Image (cartoon, rainbow, N blue to C red; front, side, top):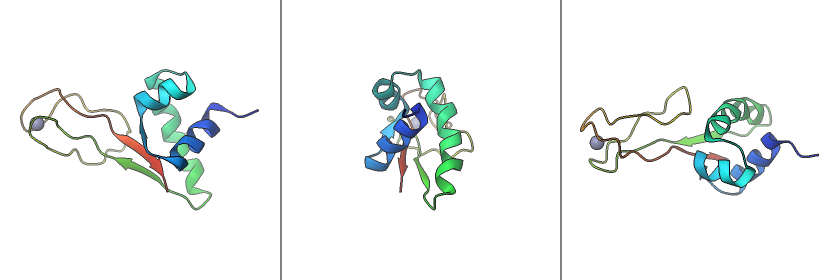
Length: 93
Ligand SMILES: [Zn+2]
């Protein structure tokens, strides 16, 4: 049986995805995706691979968020206060 986590790893090895795409592909909530992602980062590092987080950016002013320790989505742009922010994307290389 393939676990959810293995399915997510397989998806991210193939292509990069954001949490919403992953949540739809494996039928779990976005919140659960972020919880799995944290563990996946540790799992893949033991296999010599790396979880790559493509950071969120602001759609209004183009501000790019620094890579954060938690993989969640920031709420607001610190530069222009816009809430139109892209989801971070994940990939395994
Ligand atoms: Zn902004």
